[in-house]
Image 1 (spheres, rainbow, N blue to C red):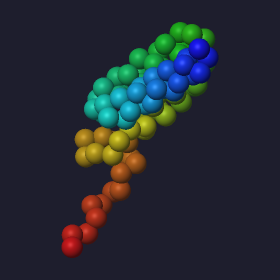
Image 2: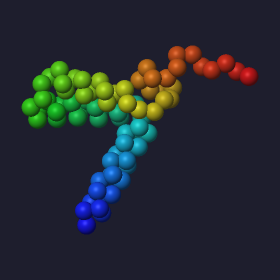
Image 3: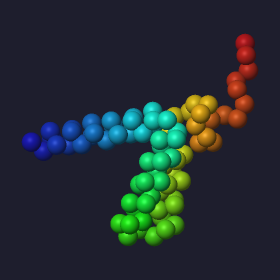
Length: 79
C-alpha cells in the first residue's frame, strides 16, 4: 500500500511539472502570481513570496514566446 502511494505521488509530481513546463508563459506568470499570493497569505514573508514567484516564472520551456531569459539570445547559425 505504501509503495502504491509513493508511486502515485511521484507520478502526480511528474505530471504537475510537465504541465507547468509546457504551459504557455502567460499562464505560468499568472499561476506564479497566484501561488505567491497564497504563500504570503500562508505566513511566508513578502520577500520569500516574491522569490518563489520569480523562481516559478523562470522555470519553463524555451520558446520564442517565453521571456524566461533561459534561451540563447541569438539564433544558431544556419548551415
